[in-house]
Length: 291
Image 1 (spheres, helix red, strand yellow):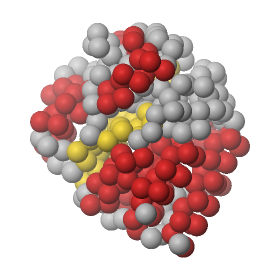
Image 2: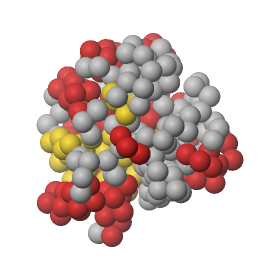
Image 3: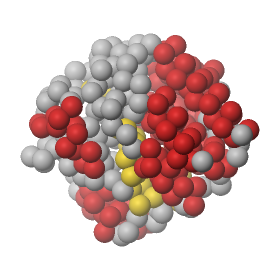
């Protein structure tokens, strides 16, 4: 039942309207297993935030998905902490504030990041670590934008969070849309084959479970839909909340990662296109729960 539901959910979240190149990757079993893992977890650490070099500000994709996933998990009684960097701090705060998310927020330092991440895991003791649209190192050890721009000087080394989690046996889950995100190493060969400049930008760190979406926010919503299936109740936010969150991010200074403009779009897709995906997910989830 859940696998069939996952296929339908994937069809919605994988809509490659932005032409990123990963629309043909199928990870339906991963979205089921990831949701089952989170459903059975107790403390969830979420990391997000992708700095746009031209504006020195975080983008509209990522913080929204992290906040709504945190909200869904809190509805299930989970304890959540969200990690980001200074470029996305205000954007994330705008989202969590609007959603009334209780999750603690942690800002990554630029020096001693590895030790910081190790200490964070030791103190918070998460059962799972989830990345939502967070840069991941390529094979040369550097961070790249989807166009191949070197972002290494802007990105705290958050790969160490996954590396440290794996050493502790903590389950890792990645949500991405371009292949250059933390945890997307699991589909690296397909990224190299299907994505422009894939050989250069493809992330190498593997997550235990990988959710590939047309927009990373949608991937987080797909997880929320699967969690709703497991819980037997809708955990996805209302469409008006989605609309408000996008506007809140823009007010906080977020930019579209593709257009580089401070406008209510995500990866070059309009506000209404983003709301429509959520609306379709809500309807599908409600129909599946009733069956």
